[in-house]
Image (cartoon, rainbow, N blue to C red; front, side, top):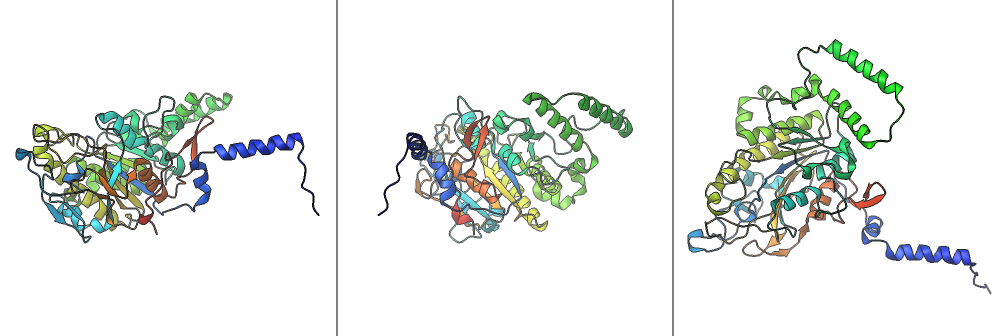
Length: 431
């Protein structure tokens, strides 16, 4: 008969400690090993940002028609069918409707910020609410950190629009930050050499700088290391190969016209940056405020909202078809996001307020198994009926499409931070 093994005091304490750690480990640690990772094949992301709050009921989740003059809640426009049976969109999205089989409108994205644009914008860029102790990295910076640039001749992360702290690298540091552009017709300000500096003179400067660096001891100062990384990247990107990305005149007039105006040209540039090897590109919409209010359609701002929707229809449909023609659509995930949606009720001026209980974000391409629409809302697109998608879930879907481990943690010095705040991908879009 076997006798039970006795434990000495040290073994007992060690076993007890291990059991205590296991019992108190967070759930996100357990899920990383309990289920196989979902992984896609995408290589790039083009993220289109609609600042101000795109109204889902007036775009990708239309419902019964409303009437602002009678204070009757509902859609502002008529709905039209799409290439996917049973899926409808707003009448001002006819081109997107025709290619909805390459897209999925995720209709049940939600978070808890309603009245604060800046806080909601931050949430939709970093995937979680603001913390008083951690400066979280943006989605673009996380992708840059995890995957890097596709090509050594390109930066990993480009922002086409004005910079903002919500788009930044947070605790990851400057090496995972963005290169930003405010014009599509020329490269980033400050990268091009002055005409008086010849290539030979620049080469001599580089050699002198290398010798000086070689004479200095290694530094542990993160600020100096970040500065050094930024300087190296700037030198690499000032060359002709990357700067040719901005020669939009090399594209045919018909193609440029199909994209439309300023926003469309930004989308065209994003395709060219994908070809150069940029991993993540954010394209901001509507710096010119075509309707006087952008997507923030309170009061009379809603009267010309259709101009924004039509501009998006032209640019996004052209981008998807252009990527497809260049055999890049399966490799490139196109994402459309906004900070929150709009309620079905009309305000006193005939416009709409804010709604975060459910709103639409869109995925296209990226090798996903698209459904046209995912998630179900009630008869006024105000409450979720089926398949809610949290912001971490939406981010996890993007990470999974790129083959990034959405269950892992990043580290703020020695503090673990779950990469997607425990998000889970939309499994139906894979396989």
